[in-house]
Image (tube, rainbow, N blue to C red; front, side):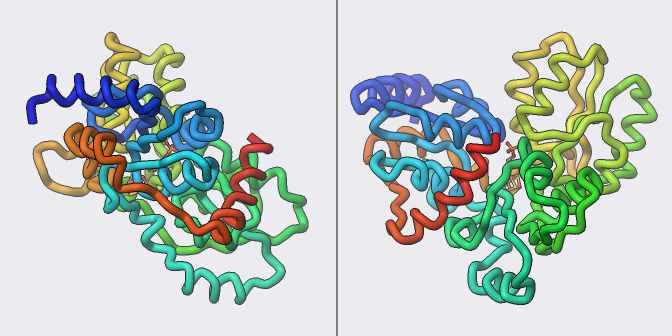
Length: 310
Ligand code: 13P
Ligand code: SF4
C-alpha cells in the first residue's frame, strides 16, 4: 500500500476513533514518525497509564501492549502484530519460573518488565532498565532477591548495587550479539568517541562503555555530552530519534558478531510491525490485547509498586 495513503488514513482513523499511538524507539522510522509518543519502556508505561484516548495502539512488542492493558482494563489496546515477541519474555515460561521461585522461598521477586503477565503476577516488583537500580536499592539490604529474566541486566545490577541477586538465565538476542573485538577496533579508529550501551548488553561490552542506560537514557546522554562521536550499543532503531536530536554528531552503531555489511543490531520482533500493519490494526481494531481479570489484577500489583517508586 502507498505510504502517503497509509499515513493519511492512520491520521484520519486516529482522530475518528480517539486513538493514541505509542511507539518504542526500536520501531521502524515510519512508525516513529506517525506516533503520538515515542519513549522507553518506563515512559511508555506511564503514558499508557495517563492517556485519555479510548484506544491505545501499541507499536512495540507483545509484553509492552500487555502492560498497557494491565494498566488500562477499560480501554481497547491493539497492536500491529500479535507475534512481535521478545527473547527475554519468551525465555521465561511461567511453569518453569514457578519452580525456580519455589526453590528460593525466602526471596522476593523483582522482574524486568520484559516478561509476560503470568511472570509479573508472580513478582513483588517490576522494573525497567531506567529504574532497575532504584528499585533494587528500595529493598532492605537483608532481603534476598530473585531477579529475572535478564541475566545481563541482573549482573549489571549486582555490580551497581553490590547486592547478591539470584538470576534467571535469560538474555536479549539483540544485545548479546555485540562484538567486543569489533567495538574496540572501531573505538581505536575513533579514540575521542564515547560508547553508550544498554544494560541488556553483556558485561564485557558494559565494561567498555562510558554510559549505560535505557533507550531514553542513552538519547539524553548523547544529547548532553560534549563529545562529537558516539558508538551506540543498542538496537539500531534508536538512531532515528538520535539523528534528529543531534544532527551534527557522528553516530556509529556498535558492530555485531554477525559478518554482514549492515553489522548493526535490529530486533526482528520490533521490526515485525510495519506502517501497513499499524493501519490495518487501527482500521479493524485487532489484534486486541485481552487479559483475564484474575491475572490482570495480580500482574498490576508489582507494576503499580514500580510506578509509585519511579
Ligand atoms: P528500554 O526500556 O530501555 O526502552 O528497553 C526496552 C527493550 O526492550 C530493550 O531491548
Ligand atoms: Fe526483547 Fe531484545 Fe527485542 Fe528488546 S531488543 S524487545 S529485549 S528481543
